[in-house]
Length: 191
Length: 191
DNA sequence: TGGATTTCTTAACTTAAGTGAACGTTTGTG
DNA sequence: CACAAACGTTCACTTAAGTTAAGAAATCCA
Image 1 (cartoon, rainbow over the protein chains, first blue to last red):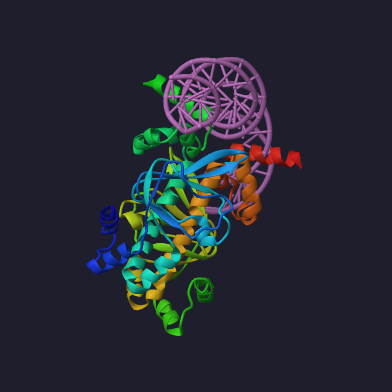
Image 2: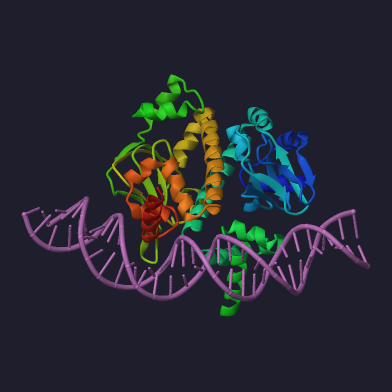
């Protein structure tokens, strides 16, 4: 389980045994059951999550119903906006399936940065990369129709369609479950 | 002009005179005329930009026409995806108006990090913050209708509507210029 | 296991966005 | 200054998404 994390880290920086021990010393690994809510709207939290196995999602409750906006699967991390801003969270985070995560705090990071500057490099590179990705994702969303977005998801993340209920996929695509259902029948007709 | 940059930086970390000099030593300030294209699709570039005054935009050419997806104004930075990935750029960057920017490269950053670790902290914090923002922006986009998106823009960035041609705003909102025009008449009718 | 809930689909109807085209206005440039 | 290009609006028409409602299928869990 730790190895999953270390393999991932090694894509950015190489770690010495000492550094690995320093990470292991923090008790950051958590197992969360499907459906567990890790963060609620209105809550102030300091926890940042990184998914080792499984799937988390962020969602909003708007006019009484859930709008899922993002999924986080293997080797993806969430730093909730409330951790950065200090304001109450505007969204929820929950486990889509049984999930293994790391939970860390800015304080823990800060402490580690002081001991091993390499970790700050790791975090900087990771968030720079995620930022560039996030921007491409937004661009792509803006320039595509719902149907195109669905087709791209089918191409790029076929696993998600298996792991996640359709109505969550729908709001992830920015449409209603009914529209997604229609798109699916439309497409299967074209084949 | 440098002061604009230093004031901004001081929101994240405090700089000594030495550090300020080290930044000033790099010749990073550029003036670009309205319309100047800083990055083209297909190009490989190492330049990262930070807007001190003015406005840049990113756009794609899809089926022969421009789709503007993002604007960058005072105190906002772009690290083009191609800089991160090493792949040819998928988008263009151009100046919406006469603009003053800084242009830097990962190499310059790297060099500065080695001398002043504080800069890496600055960059980490900045990109973490931008990442959290970028995610909120995407969530907001997904959960709003075109009309709601326009109303929010009107509320949050009224300046953009003055600075930028309407058809660029339209694709920024993920709609056609005609739709934006309709939304505007629809809204003014409601008042 | 069996009832309740959730999930997905279908359908009819409404609303709004996309498309193609025309037209007046503004802007920019030779 | 005059012409061309770019820009914004309007219109008629098409297409697709939102809405409301209902029902079938899958799933959850007591």
